[in-house]
Image 1: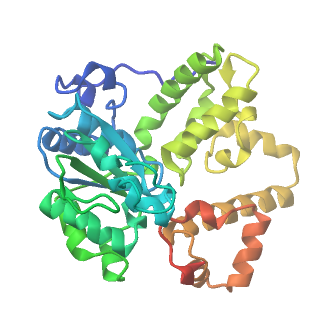
Image 2 (image 1 turned 45 degrees about the vertical axis):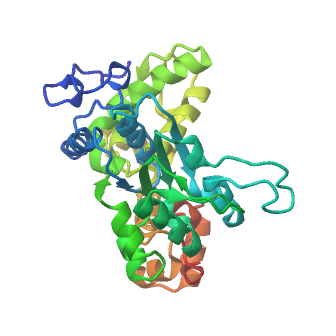
Image 3 (image 1 turned 180 degrees about the vertical axis):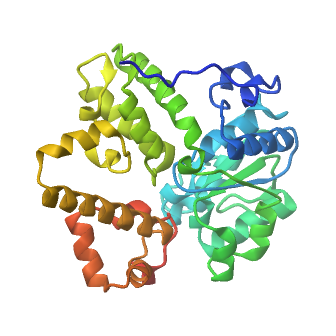
Length: 356
């Protein structure tokens, strides 16, 4: 049976608002009260020049929100430059952001423009801003305060007509309190803070995301999947999604590739996704096993879910997770190996070496 999640747009959907450009209507379609509030804030801040700080877990769609702000601003016809700060080696961050002059260092045979040059009169999106070093924090503070920057090896100040949107998957306020992030830079970045709710907090939108992704993969892979089985939709809605939308995309793509019928069936998905879906069809399959075996499987599923939620809460920190669970770090490592859970999946980009 095809996916029954397709529903007409409701009056509460942001799609009904004429503010949005036609090409982003699917992106702003939501039934989540939290996401509706987020989009209302986007509408308020987009036409301004204000610096925006996007916060939320990895994979919630901060990049999408940054593009929405740019696309609905007066700078929409200029460049939108996305910089993934966490992916840049520390030694290259400055030259990547601000460029360098000829002869600035060995190999600098000619002038190179930086990302701020490329974003002039447009918008620069500094993703994972929490990963930049203290030195770069000072240089970025100068750009925000004085609207100027200097290329590496250069002396002349260059005026910066760039709107800055930053994003962090860690609590910058907490990083400030811990001494890892400058408070003066945090205050400059958080003129307009915007929290993006996790996918688990807006599970009402998951059926629509399933439809959207199936349509996307139909165009990408030239198959004709018509929808998802209702058991699949139920399981995906009830799953906690620690990896958020990015994890959902990966799961749907894997199932799409494996599926040989016109409908995405449970057999094409990792069975752990169904551990939280208490549907009668799954329960009826268990009557072929002994009660002891059913209990053992249920306990393992519960244990696995507990460990994942624990690591998510403590952002992959083993010491804190073990303390909360009332076990030793050695015991926790053993359980993670048993359930094939990687602590790295729950860590933010910025981590302290004491928490490894």
